[in-house]
Image 1: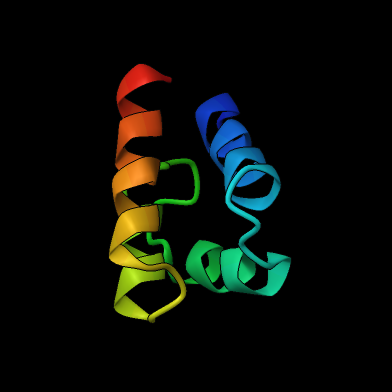
Image 2: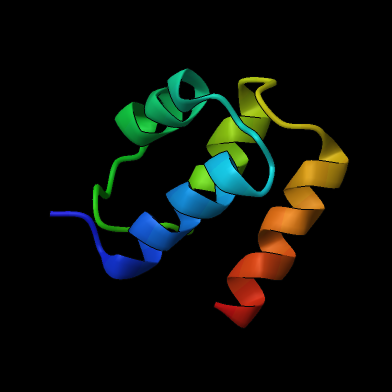
Length: 65
């Protein structure tokens, strides 16, 4: 089961940053802790699925979430 923070992060990625659902799915599959949201931004960046500017926005969002 996804945590509520993880669900909110996925919505933010798709709705606010327009990250394709396929890219989000890759990050979710690579995430070792299926309920944790903290690894998703780095996985997206490591696979070249987000820019550094987007990565900063994601971390800012996580700080306030």
